Length: 212
Image 1 (spheres, rainbow, N blue to C red):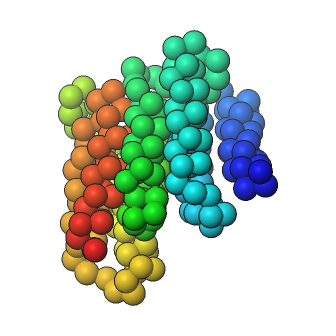
Image 2 (cartoon, rainbow, N blue to C red; image 1 turned 90 degrees about the vertical axis):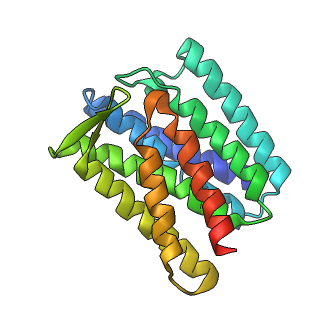
Image 3 (cartoon, one colour; image 1 turned 135 degrees about the vertical axis):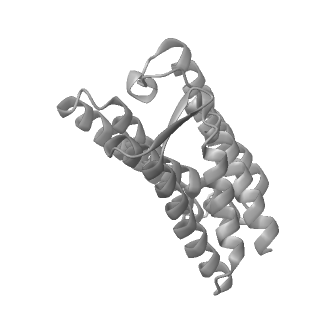
């Protein structure tokens, strides 16, 4: 019970920060979503540290996914879905996390964390930097992408996989660059928020395959 109290407390903290930020920055809808997007990232290593078992993690993530799906339909918590474009990103976010937990919770937690962090930190920071600074941009499937955002995605993904890979194997190799490049390439295809699914799943699978 204490373990899940810690998880709920952390989630409450993240959502509280986002609500307070929105109160004082009502025009920054995308930033509010990114606070949640990035903030949830550390939840996985926290749960691993607390030694929460795989079935409990799957049940918890499944319940959250159902709540997110209901919220997408009825907008009970508009902060989560308050975005300027049509997107199923939050649904894909939860679905990808559920699959990652199912595949790697016990088998390869490093791959799970790597894939999830590439999405939460890489994709999240790319969105923030890309919208905050002007740079060369292009359109892919009606989605605007920028040079600064793309570089942020690559560098953040590289830092993530290098850090986690080194923690696991105590070395650095070219496979880390390949994973970061793949994640950056897939993030370009963000129509309807599908990148929240294909980026973490592909990154985790490649991390598991190339490093193990």
